[in-house]
Image (cartoon, rainbow, N blue to C red; front, side, top):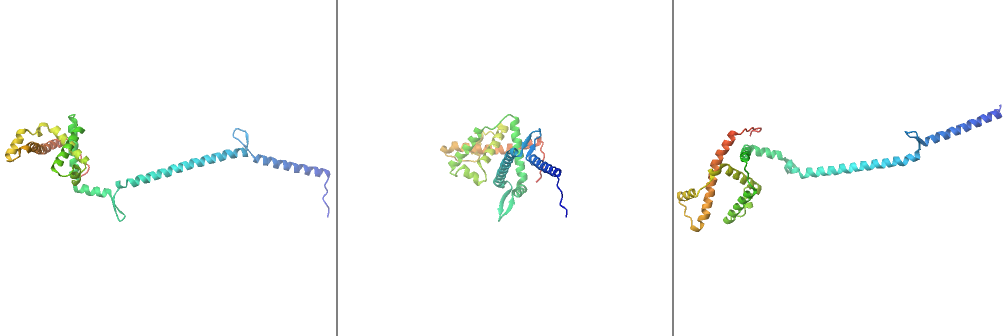
Length: 254
């Protein structure tokens, strides 16, 4: 078997090819370790690594912040729903809910028309008073409340709050009624005024025997009763007139 013959020229060519291959490999390795930026500058990968790490860290921080905000908002929403559960559920029976709207529907069916008429009347009276440029002052309301408290205390019937609670009313309900009464007085004016002569006639007609020391208080009470009677009669007539003049549109029929 013949051995290959290596001449000097072949050895030189092979040596040159080996050197060329090693140089090419070094160039490829060098190119792999470098990155050309968009503006033509060559940047080492080792230089870009810290920048990419910083960007990754910043992105994680943003994600964590958004996640924390989302969790906080979810907790707030759940808390609000729990605190406002009475807006949707009136009660539960062995875990089964009774919707608040079901209760409202029953109340509307029972007395919806009556309540609606009362609200319409209240609105008509308020509008009539506003047209005349009149209003009920807080002092006038407070005076009426104090007057009722004194009357109840004198009668030994407990407190005003207790009597209101027995009737399913609150102080705010009472103040609303006082406002309507005062507004009617402003609209009716002299029609509901009670004179001393009328009080005397009432006492004589009913043959009331009142001790002298109680006469003054009795006359005040009689005057208030007669005023309420006039308020009822004249007030009904006034409301009927206001309704006849008003434009009332019903969107619900009970």
